[in-house]
Length: 133
Image (cartoon, rainbow, N blue to C red; front, side, top):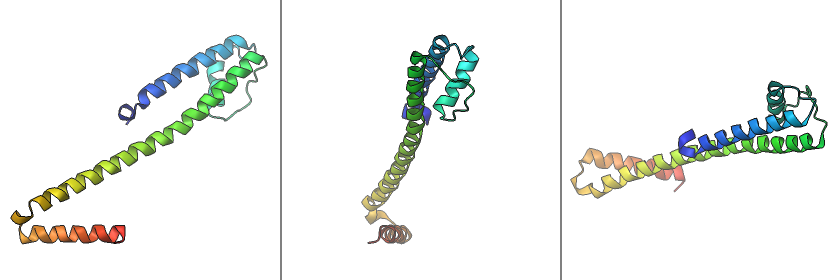
């Protein structure tokens, strides 16, 4: 699913964004003393948990935290949309496949056995019942 939807590149880009911003926060604010602390702080920011372990104090670090938080919100909002799109595409493909099989049977109608014709009639009734016609 990741490859088909292009999500691999998005997640890789977000990982780079996350690491870069955590590094920048670490070097711009004395309260965040190690890169590990910066990664932990960044995780709290992007997941909107906000445990309060660290508080940035410099204006530049605060700007970076706001941007990191917005990036996290966008990333977590993007994932369900991609998953929904992927699922709907699969449903649409299955529907197209079923219709193509049905059309193939209709094209061969003169050659079909009575049993095959009954099966087509039953499928048609089921579809009409399902769509309310």
